[in-house]
Image (cartoon, rainbow, N blue to C red; front, side):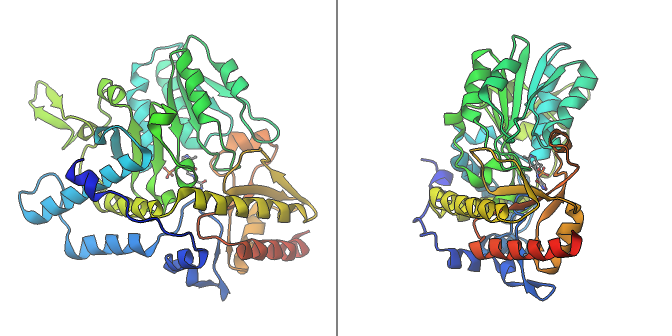
Length: 418
Ligand code: 7TS
């Protein structure tokens, strides 16, 4: 085992004690409009534990310099922490080597990286398959590619329950399919997709697979070798880490075969005006000064979440999901959008006669933070005949009592609005 791998090894597993977990997140003790904060918007961005905040502060206060260039100890120290963060990501997703872990500024950039590099190897008439529940970040890059080089974008339909069936994915595949790009978990509905089976079906016809794991990474254990996906993209800020940092996992042979994404410092091994040569992975895809401290913060977030048994966190979040779904169903005039059998950590709904934005504004007066809007999934909203929904989403720190606060506040809002 390398020294880095050894440093990143997991320490003892913590018992999942919700009160103690909540104490790890300082923001949860604040109030909003003189009411306790009820934060139900972790799908947009999760709150940060003290351990992450401390690491970020420490780096800027005590140990800050640029990475990969200083011959002095401060730069060397931060360079090794930056690379240690990469190793922590590698372990977390079980990638084979650190060379398969590319730091980006978020999931959006990670998907754009694939469309701008792997995508450039596609030809007119080649097909890219997505589903009807994708976030705009997993739609627009493929539309741009379609407009640039004439690929065909195929969309797998979404059922009335907000589900995507393996049969429908299989029906969309053809000899021309070069890539299947699908969400692990829908951000708007919480639907959990059968990504392992989708990957196997795509591979069977020779297509590559990109998983948009922006939501999935926070709620499901991810083993990229077991999934066998070619790419897995996610953002740090949904995983209790800082924003400005994300990850593109790519199989080493895929990343080696792809042209660089952006040009600049760090991604080269030799430059002349006539021609230049590219650096080894992953530097080839990390042009310019990277998000250094955010990467170290992401490492701290991974260490924090890895301190628990992931199945304990998943069981707790599932309890909240089931409880919230039951409670919402007791309210008149609420229509749930997205009732798939397999879901994680999010409920979307509309209240007949009330606009989701008005509802969210009223809920805020009770200290409740929920997202209202199209959730960057407009085609999915169209599928359900709505322009927007209210979405309550859960993180490891939420409680059943917070669900009760939401339900009470909804009852109150209904009296005002309907
Ligand atoms: N893919 C999915 C499935 C997402 O949920 C999001 C962000 C993205 C991609 C883009 O991530 P970014 O970090 O690069 O912006 N989703 C949400 C959301 O549901 N509410 O706010 C952001």
